[in-house]
Image (tube, rainbow, N blue to C red):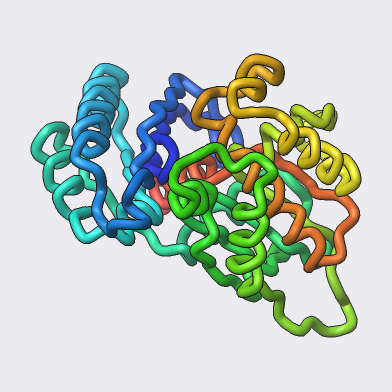
Amino acid sequence: FRSIGSNAIRFTAAEFLDPSERVELEARRVPVRLGHSAYLTGLLDPQNIEAAVEALASFGRRIDALGIRDVRVVATSAVRESRNGAELVERVLRASGLRIETITGEEEARLVWLAVRDRFPLEGRWILADLGGGSLEVSVVRRSGIEWSESHPLGTVRLLEELGGTDPGSGDRLRALLARHSSTLRLPVLDDEGLAGLIATGGNIEALAKLAGAERDVRGVGRLPLSGLDALNRRLAELTYRQRVRKLGLREDRADVIVPAGRIYARVAELSGATEIVVPNVGVKDGVLMDLVAKSGAS
């Protein structure tokens, strides 16, 4: 499986012992920021296309070497919204034989729900927020399914691009941009059952929870108090990009996007009335793997 996101391309190979138990054979992450320039110009950058083709060709060789049978390659908002996304799809097919499937925001939400349901009990009704480089999917979910879902053009790389690609820090421009974009966020009117809480997914919330010292339970699920997130957001804003890399040990392609990410998650928590965020440490890639094995078993 490969996931082509706005900030990175991920490759995961796994062997399933049964539908609920798997052994990870290999996992790689290549920091190709396809969202760079794409959200402003509507075009994928030629250099990033080259880097993506090279990464996917190398993944294709690993698939052959590992003897993998079931493969799925998904691309999200950067490819979905770009006028030359088809060029990337065609070049990857020629170079590797891999067929890229450009998925909708609704499919992203479904895949994340599959992964969360496998990791977390989902008793009652929950808000599920999945934040990527190009979009934010907000859903109302329970174990039996998704009741409501909306995809918003509120991704971290997208925001950085609108800021000119510079470190956001605590500047007024970031606050104004977040206020303008987040004004479109809403939740549906719910009945008296209400909400059990907020679940958040994505690489940034996992990094935020780790920085805040949120411990994981035996299933790998962490809980981040909103007060802890607010304090961490203030600290991140006070540090420069280089300080976040050096002092906090963040990857270079995480140290910039984590600032708007923390603010977006805090805004979703505010809307949902949550005082803590459940972090299951799963995402689209886990949902795709589960979907693959389910369809393979059905066939």
